[in-house]
Each structure stands twice: as C-alpha cells, then as structure tokens.
Amino acid sequence: MAEIIDGKAVAAEVVEEVTRHARELIAAGTTPGLAVIIVGEDPASQVYVASKSKKAKECGFHSVQHTLPAETSEEELVALVETLNRDPAIHGILVQLPLPGHIDSGRIIQTIAPEKDVDGFHFINVGKLGTGEVETAFVPCTPAGSMLLLERVRGKDLSGLNAVVIGRSNIVGKPMANLLLAANATVTIAHSRTKDLPALARTADILVAAVGRPEMVRGDWIKKGATVIDVGINRIAAPERGEGKTRLVGDVAFEEARAVAGAITPVPGGVGPMTIAMLMANTLVSACRAAG
Ligand code: GUN
Image 1 (cartoon, rainbow, N blue to C red):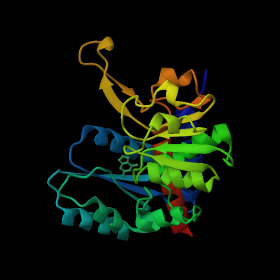
Image 2: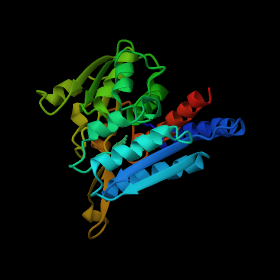
Image 3: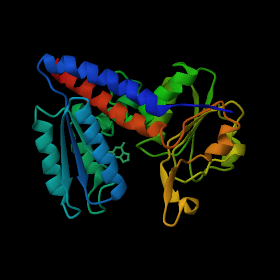
C-alpha cells in the first residue's frame, strides 16, 4: 500500500513559517499585502477566492478582496489592476481564472506588474521559469506546491527518474514540466492527443495528473512504486451518501492507485492546500523584495 502524502500537514508547516517571517517583516515596517480579484459568480471560484483571502489574514497579511459583477468590462478590470500595480500596500495581485468570456484573460494577466504576479502567469515569470531563472521567478502555486510534496518523498534531485505530466495547461502542466526538468527528471508531457496514454503513464516513476477528468488515471496505468501527484479536484455525484450528495475526487482512481503506487497525494488534502500555502509564500517573497 502506498504512503499517503499529507498535503494538509505540509501546507500547515509552510503557512506557519510564512506567518513567522511575516511577523518579522511587519515589525520592520512592511505588512505583506495580497489583493484577490474575482469577476462573476462561479461557485467553485468563489470558494477558492474566499479561502485565499482568509488564509492571507491568518498569516497576518493585509488582505483585500475585489468581488466584481459578471458584466464588468475588460477596461474596468484593467483599470483596477493598474491601480493595484501602483498601490505600495499591495505586493501580490491575483485575478481568479477563468474570467467571463467577454474579457481577454491574456491581456489582464499581462497587465499585472511582473513583480506583483504571485500567480506566476506573466510572460516575464513564465520566461524566467522556462530559462531556469527559478530563483527570481514567481512560480505558479499549484506546481510549486506539488514539487514541495514530491521533494518530501523523492528529495530535490530527480536525476534518472522518468516523469510524465498528464495535462498541458499554462497554470499546471507546462510549469510543472519545467520544474521537473529543473530538478533533472526526464520529462514527458501527455495530453488529449497522446497515443496510448496508459502505456506512457506506466513508464513514469513520477506521475502528475492535471487534466480535470474525475478518476481518469486507473490503477493499471501506474508503475509499481511510482510517486503519484493528483492535481485534479472534481466534484461528482455521490448517491451512496444520499439523494443529491456530492464528493470530491481527483484525476486518479485513488483506491486502485494506492494498491500499486509507492506514494500518492489524496483528494482532498493533497495538492489543494499546497496551492494556497504557496500563494502565501510568493506574497511574502514579494513583500520582502519590496522592503529591500
Ligand atoms: N484558477 C484555477 N487555479 C488558479 C490559480 O492558481 N490562480 C488563478 N488566478 N486562478 C486559478
């Protein structure tokens, strides 16, 4: 049976350390500030954004949330981001994705000042990560958190290990592949057009699932002893719990995978809490840089 990687516990350690550092920074005159923007009423996004703002407060940060109606224009959103770019009390700006269809997400992301881009989505930060400038880049929170969990099991150096990342999103798949590469893994990115995905997955010593398809990765896709990082958070119907009930599952069929893998992250309680913890860490780093 696989070791269960306790993301909740690791995230709590990160948050505790961030809180301690924040206290010192505040005493020296700089309070880390995080602004989170949400446009529209997507219920899942609302939950994520509320937990980001709440965690920032718990860390002692100055935390502001801008909740804008779905009809907000692109120009209004650009103006808000530009205002926050100029605000010296704000060190991190996060615009929750996805945005409503009439807004060009790319333009909004590129409007965020790179030094306040705690999501790591701006071209400058993407480019730094892609060229190995990991020290000065903001690294996207979900892949950064996934790497920290992986480090607990496999250490920092992944030389000689095959990593397969399923999913090629800008938020998770691509930055995850770059981080694995920076850690010396041999990396393959798989996606919806990949041929014989189960066979490819079985070559992985490290398997990262980031596709958003409930329980797509089955037990027989997994190499014995592999480390499995499940990034998916999918809400599915759970009639066994009663009429209309739901439950959260990952992109990996957990019980099947657990019987084969060496270590695996659960859903919930794996990668999810790490995402928020890394956002706090990135905001602290930004505030430290601003304080000089
Ligand atoms: N939507 C899903 N994940 C993320 C994330 O990490 N950052 C932002 N801004 N939006 C998201």
